[in-house]
Length: 219
Ligand code: SF4
Image 1 (cartoon, rainbow, N blue to C red):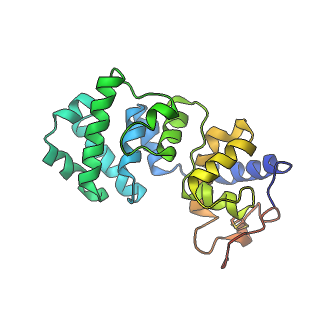
Image 2: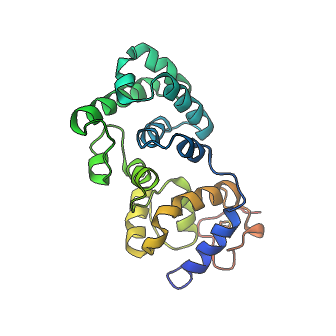
Image 3: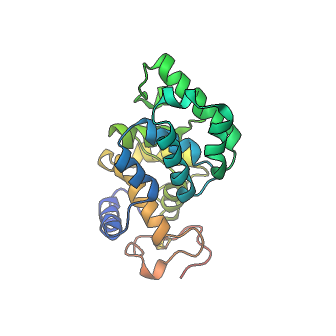
């Protein structure tokens, strides 16, 4: 079982393992653009879309209209076309326009840097709000996506039914020094070792700590 007496060791093993992996595609996009608005917008586009597809659409949109003002100057139909490949493009185009508008009207053109303010924007849930504060502003937050939720439950580090509940438990038990990096490490770990279906337990360096809770089939 992973708990507070071994979490340092477990996360050190995870960190070392993922060090050689290529950063996730959206992380690479963020690194290149270095703009909080372009951390936030790809999150909105990522709903039910693969990261690769999201990154291509985000880049197209960035090239067409890099600022909230410019996004508002695009014809709504054109904006929908740019987002078409990500699915749910009408709702996403509406959310992107409304977010651009609110950022200009309420926040003087800058993305707010608190979870509470981010949550007031349309289409922004806790995952997006936490990712934005951590990646764009390097402020404490715990972004819980499907990988973080899955792995922390398999470890028995938390026992939760959904990502928001996982975030709340992690906020109570995870040492703060790991908050910002946890998502990055566990996304890569979940994509390469602790796969959703049939994880590679025989190759997993933390297997001696992991009770594999809920894992039905592994390799
Ligand atoms: S790969 Fe297997 S042993 Fe490793 S963390 Fe995932 S479930 Fe646990």
